[in-house]
Length: 452
Image (cartoon, rainbow, N blue to C red; front, side, top):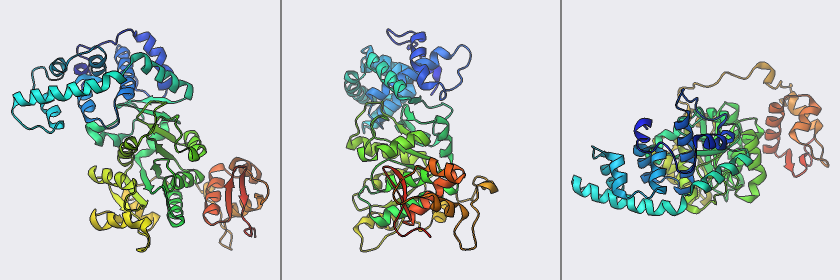
């Protein structure tokens, strides 16, 4: 967006000084925002707050809002909403001496006609949008949303920020106006080498096993794993990535304080601590079916490739696959039994939508990184030594440190065996996959009959 054009006629917001906005935004943007040029800090602060305000009023994926932000700037659009501009004034500000804005908005309404008709269709469309957004946008409530985020330790990211996910640019006008995140924003840089692992909530044991094996293997190869934090395949992928010491990002359909589903709350808290939780809606927002579907476009856009691990014919993960296909991202699907309804969606993707059939972690990695350009191998001291019997020394040490009766956290086990946490976490993940250990409420325990 051209910042000068976007702020034309909208260089402030009513009742809010630059200093007040600066104090308000500082806790949620200290490590994420751009380095403002000298004399530009007031505009930067205004733009960031306006984007935060728009997340309270605009539903995810609203193309009309995206086009108006592009032409007016976020500050200009917020002023138009709160100051009661009519559609003609908005069009004048957006288009001035050109008909581009009118034509774009008319196109979004499905109208193709002459310039005069475009103007009328665009005005009608903008009137509907303003009527939809005005009851939802309050500057005081927007300020409270920022304060809630600050209390939560969340951050606000805007396009152009240092750690804004580059892949979201492919969504064009459908890109989020801002992101709210929990976790270190710098971790989002790992998305430049990432794979989305998605699938059914009602997953089978086979599907979860494949998801965990795949996530652990991809993490070992330096890929960040992206998913949606749901039950089933999503949770298995997130969990295995964390256990392997990898980086995982969960895009949520509600606010980053709404740890949904509740049964995954502990997992989502761990992702916030060790990875990133991200949402385009402000804290306090409730997930809805429509928001889940629109959230899926962020998963597909943020990752280099999308893999559907297991999906029935009606699985929501097929929606994510559709977004990946529309964006031109590599799409893969894991086959299952031809007798299993749980894999029918994957088989359909392969048969009808040209998804690549992937059966190994290597094939998944190749889909996202066909040239094989990856990170340097881990230093030798992080490679577990292997005994002549095929079991690594690290695995033997961890198994010896586990008890069948008394649980222990990965940190406690790492301290006992005097190994790096990353190695212990990876070993525990492999033991879990092999059925030799499992994590309970009290920590990690050894499964029956697994010692020795």
